[in-house]
Length: 618
Image 1 (cartoon, rainbow, N blue to C red):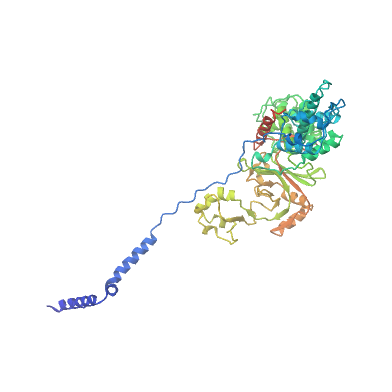
Image 2: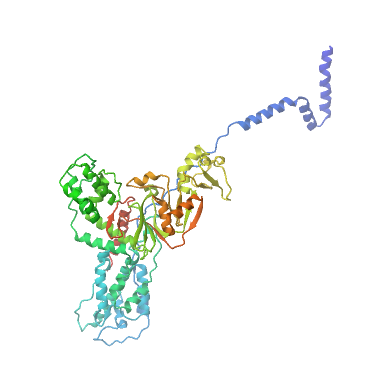
């Protein structure tokens, strides 16, 4: 055996004796001590490789877009039968001797047996309660209808002058002549007339006071509080007063705009259909010519006012027959466009034509009737001071003491992000405001970009906070895990790039709509100004803020220079975020506007649904 062989065998023998003598666990540890270095390193390398191997990313949460309110098929309340059971069963002392002087209420009650009368549920309940508590007629005296009933029926018959349908309130009175020997039949006719007229008078009062439909059923874009009306008190008042006409007419809105719309309706119905028809596709630039131009110039003279005619009448008269759009007419066209609230660019296009000739008599009547209905949803007294935003006109007006002290152009919501229709009260002004990003914009517009560029908000001047108010970096969030709702608050800090500009005017509401400044000034020069996400952008926000505060514009400018701050509005100032395609100016002249959101047609369908429910009633 060579020395080398002995050297190899000895450690092996030693190892074998040690392994054989040691418990299994100790043997394993010893094995690792002698030979395990390489194995351990290999295992560690494998573990590291496994940890570093790319893991399959969890599937991103699908983006569930937050949808805007939808429009619904309007469902009118069904009519219910007026129940006379309690009235008929109430204990009374009744004379069974025939009376020639007239019917007592108690004597006539038997005529209600088997009588079917349908009415709106509040109307039916008011009739049941009133006559159960008052054993007397309102509309009958002796054996005939009384003067109170005659006056009431006259008012109901004139409902069309308010844009209402007289057929909804029609009641046939008993014949003046009757068989004196058949008094029970006369009593029956009188008591049934009494109930029918009360039902139709109450319907009229409800319609005049709050409108024929519930606008909130049309869409979530409508948000009007219920106008409480005590119909039992109405009957009680009518049973006492002889001034029936003034009382019934007082149930309508008592403001100058409602009266102006009613006057416009009367004029329209008495007028002829449009006698001047201009091609709706007309497009004419200075230097061009068209046989439609003389007709349009004639409309400029007729559809403006005395001030316009005084300034431009001579030019209009001198060019009355011309088809050439020469330089002398450019100023006239621009003035006419400005008169209608259009961009005064001097180019005659479809919007200029529509402003002067595009609305037929029938369309105008429909717009006025719709406007009257919509005003009935509002307070009777609109208030002073007040701010009135008319979305189809793209204008905001500050009115005080019955005068429009300030009016400006506005930008309203896109068709996909419509501005709601409601009223509220202004509370405060925020200077150099933060912009709290709504969930709809965060999910629908920002989330797709944040998935590709998580640091986008950090670089763009936004602050992100979690539910506990802790600031978080945008880049640290895994935006892929969120779809329909993001559990963070995002706001843009004050800056020149801030979406709200220098200030915002708040009237807190569930729609998160307010008036504000904007860095996108060029949009105010467009005729159609539906570009926002729903809020109302003001062309002159400083002037509006100063108006509602009752302070000079310099005060507002000084507050802006001082940085971010808030100022409370100490006066009661209602704000109407309204939608009227026909609306009077303060002089009473009604202007007509395009139905940018197609809301008029939906309201007409709601009115038709209501008319269908009422049609079968007696």
